[in-house]
Amino acid sequence: MSLVSLHDVGFTYAYADRPALREVTLEIEPGLLYGVVGANGSGKSTLCSVLRGVIPHFHPGELTGAASIHGTDLLDWDPGELSRSVGYVFQNPFTQISGIKETVFEEIALGLENLRTDPAEIVERVLEVIDRVGIRHLMTKNPNELSGGQRQLVAFAAIVAMDADFVVIDEPTSQLDPETSEKVFSIIAGLKERGTSIVLVEHKIDLMAEYADRLIVMSRGRVLEEGPTREVLVSPSLDEAEVLRPEVTDLALALERRGDPLPRVPITRAEARELLAPRLEEAPDAHRTH
Ligand SMILES: Nc1ncnc2c1ncn2[C@@H]1O[C@H](COP(=O)(O)OP(=O)(O)OP(=O)(O)O)[C@@H](O)[C@H]1O
Image: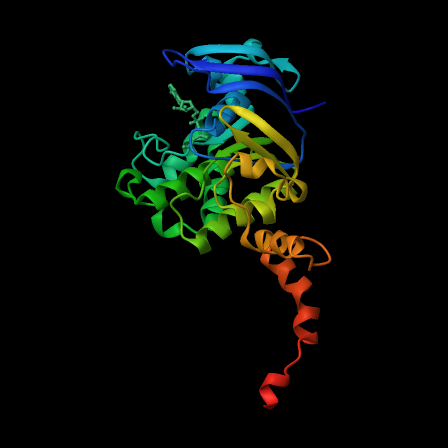
């Protein structure tokens, strides 16, 4: 059974003059990492809110079509129950911190406390996640005194600590440097390996290319395409959605148009290096002898 099933779903926020989502039909299958890409305002966060079940429970508006999570209609879910089974990282670093806890440690423990996890287990899990995310130095700091990027890491750690089987993560790295972004992605990949299903909104297309199994392309509230990452990255729907491809993919497509294609179109740098290596070896170095 699909984890989430959406059929012809539309959503219009209260007082908005047009829908934020239109005619969205989508199946989210368990055990995969789905990347959501699209321009600003294309509906990615709204889709996340539907997938997580906070629409229509917490955001007023009109939901149309049929949406079910774990086989139960969205409208029949008790919001509390749903938040226990779906973890979520908000993109806004200033709202994703509860504001009620005095230390980073307590902030990360908050979700587990709400789940009434045994206190000894909370300590063990929070410490383990703090080390995995690399924020031990922040442990006793006040969350309200952190930088945007540090808050983002703390919110991410709180989700990882909850160990939900389905996680929706909305722009976890927007304020992080490349190295820390890479680390967050490798932790997300680790969650997937442990069986967590993940929907991830992210603008860093190179990281999406490397880690996502499937991509969902959004434009003006619609899902233009959903499919395996490799297929979607060469599809015209990305142009229509105004989403940039990885540079290596763009270059390979340009070579193809010139009639000089690589054996296949790379989507990561590592793959591009591998595909280009034979050409570089063959390249005449005669110019050096002159
Ligand atoms: N709480 C809200 N009330 C009214 N309209 C909203 C609300 N949140 C989003 N919208 C509108 O819904 C549309 C989709 O917004 P959404 O935040 O889902 O897009 P997004 O793709 O996540 O954008 P971004 O990349 O900028 O985060 C936009 O037109 C936005 O203005």
